[in-house]
Length: 134
Image (cartoon, rainbow, N blue to C red; front, side, top):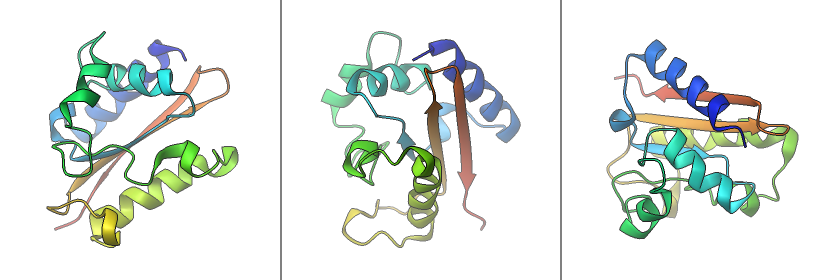
């Protein structure tokens, strides 16, 4: 995982959307490996560098937390379908923003979500910020 690729991608995404990490209310984060998920929390600006594990322990990323992450179960729960990973993340966030996720629906229904996907050895990263129209 190249932290620089994620940091560059998320900086560009936040600038384009005119938002900050604090504006995100739900996220699907690349978690093909547990350590990558922890580093990604930090690189995306959700936790300070070195404090990704603390973010998890705080409960903030739980379904009922301030910033639910990987409400779909994450990549490993889906068998990490490499070519379909990104679209599966988008699908989850769109359905969360629409309030159509049943038992795993975030409450209140979020208005802004983020998807983070890593390709190859970590040098290829995409970050999408999705916003629900009023």
